[in-house]
Image 1 (cartoon, protein in one colour):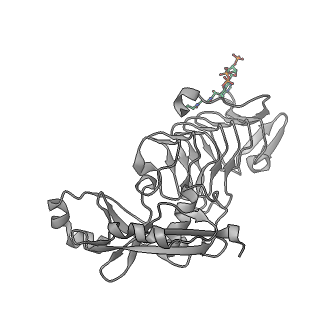
Image 2: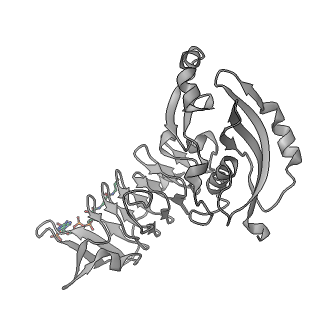
Length: 305
Ligand SMILES: CC(C)(COP(=O)(O)OP(=O)(O)OC[C@H]1O[C@@H](n2cnc3c(N)ncnc32)[C@H](O)[C@@H]1OP(=O)(O)O)[C@@H](O)C(=O)NCCC(=O)NCCS
């Protein structure tokens, strides 16, 4: 493997008393190889047992190959960190079989707990004021990484592994999955599914939906270009290029029949094209695509400061 395709980090991993890894946190992952000894030693003071949760926190360090499949829980967590630290872009790191390496975890305000232990230790957890926030394979991004220049209104709406570039705002109704995110300043008020990449200056309107590929049979990985507007409650199952607009409330899937002038095409044939307005004609009900000139949307700069 080339050195640029390696990722190295020292961190802390939470383990159950029988040694099952529940998570790993890497404060400063880097591309390439690195001497991690000093960094690992510095983390030692944060390691140790937490009897309230039935876990032991241990220091770890490792170097992984971004092109190889994840080999362990700690390795899988380093991949998620690499995405969220913007060391790699979505779809540019091997995540094959990642679900198998991510145990389901009871996430609490004191850190991860094994779900069986959480059920067993519930009275003790309550006694210590430890609150359960979710049962899931992925933690919240902001418990592990604080991306620079980004606003996230509701921490529970963005998973570790999200790639959020400076200037991005994720409002309460927005959601960003792992291995998905933004390449520039964007407004996210809808759902950004796994594998979806959003270009600079693009606005994903309130309640909008972007079709994913993890479940439900979808196979097309959607990407959206720059300065494009996905209207409120709109949805998209094809890629959009730069300077496009999808009318509020219109869902365009790959098979949607679209009128382009006098012709009818499937929306999939327009996938990725620049400068298109998709609109449902409110008189005929037909979905129409028309070329639009100029810049798509301009974000309200005051919201991205
Ligand atoms: C599709 C959309 C971009 C059109 O907006 P627009 O380009 O400003 O166009 P206008 O509303 O000025 O309409 C232009 C003409 O098209 C007509 N028109 C607009 N939408 C139409 C529709 N769906 N069917 C038929 N005619 C329509 C208008 O009545 C108007 O007709 P006129 O020339 O006779 O007056 C807009 O309706 C939209 O959905 N924007 C999304 C905004 C959004 O959701 N932002 C995110 C917030 S969270």
